[in-house]
Length: 74
Image (tube, rainbow, N blue to C red; front, side, top):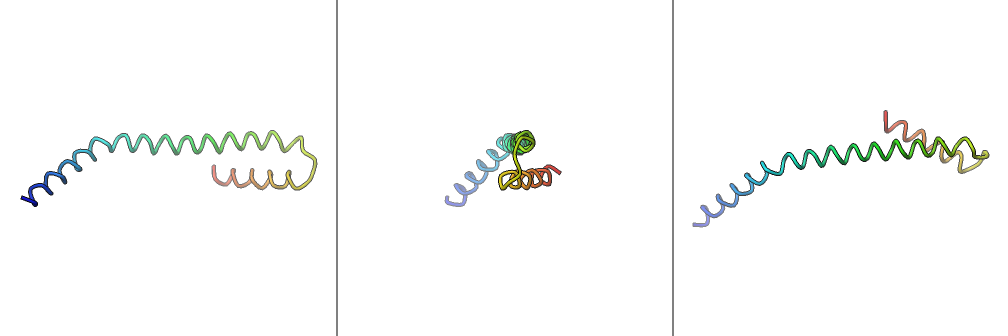
């Protein structure tokens, strides 16, 4: 009896996985596209602020952050 119950539970999980797989892929693609969109918007914001700043620690930090974003975006 226990083996039959275990097989039924396994089969239900298998069916559920087949139904959920497309939504998991869509969510993964959505999250990666949102991550890249966030990086691009942050890059644009930093580029806009760097030009109007006086030389100093903040400008150096923003320039370093911009270089890091460029490296991530490829």
